[in-house]
Amino acid sequence: MTWCPHVTVATVVEQDGRFLLVEEYAGDELVYNQPAGHLDPDESLLEAAVRETLEETGYRIELTGYCGVTLYTAPSNGLTYVRHTFSGRVVEQVEDAQLDDGIVGPAWLSRDDVANCNRLRSPIVLTTIDQYLNHPNLPLSACY
Image (cartoon, rainbow, N blue to C red; front, side, top):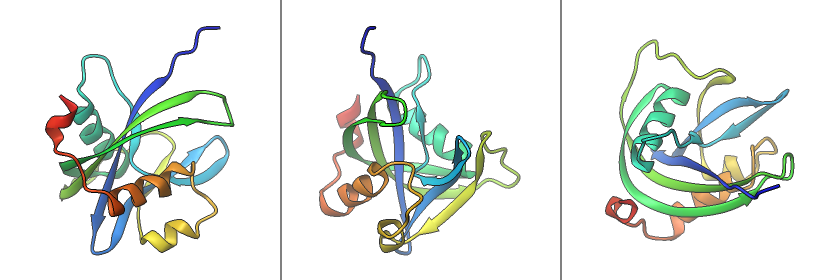
């Protein structure tokens, strides 16, 4: 079997001390995750991050920085994900937005709420929030 990492994107969006998360189903389990998903063919990392956030939360965002990359192997399926995370800010909430299948909806949680949550999709949800809070973001041009 050939090892093939999956390229994904995610966003950290903070507003009034709370972070935009997605309540979604992972199998039969209801979990919290950042707005995140796979890179589509012929799509830039930045385009994918904006698209995934809209599709999963109904919020249109503007990217403001690059938080970094995280390598994560999911114990549930053994797949390795190369996750590029961006910071952003809300531009608008899209009325009647159609959310992706399996998405319950957006949720705004504080960092402490996330740290104390036992329903995170993976530990990188908190890791990327802390990365955003504790390290300066790189300019978006770092991803071209």
